[in-house]
Image (tube, rainbow, N blue to C red; front, side, top):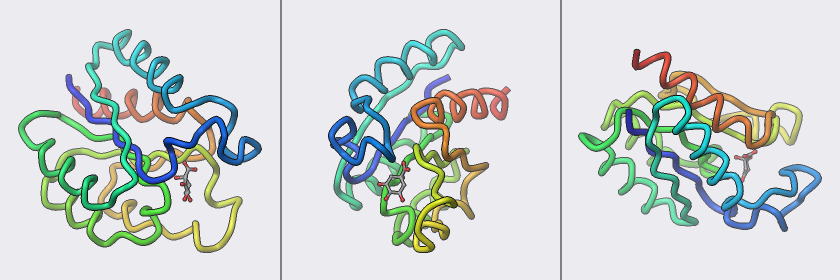
Length: 143
Ligand code: DQA
């Protein structure tokens, strides 16, 4: 199984960015531990980050035929992007939405997601473990 793991804006700043909210680990460290976990359950991952909405849209399109599922932390685009919802709907790949923080315990503007209606499910509040939970859910879904 091949899964595309996408990360949106500002997630390249993990480690420095609001560590009280997002933890001390860098995205590179999260990638290493997510890949090790994925290999252990028989999933190959391509782990990417961009700050650009259109790049996420392109990557989602390109996933068709190359990956069996998507795990995505869309960052702030979660709360703003109709384009991401449309792209995910267009490709129709099983998608799990991930947030490091518990968005429902935070500001009201983080309580709405444009991605959730096209996701299999949402994992939030468990920090970097969320990526592993998303891969576990995708594996079970694809079995
Ligand atoms: C986030 C939550 C979003 O509200 C925020 O804009 C982020 C990160 C998370 O992982 O908790 O950039 O997606």
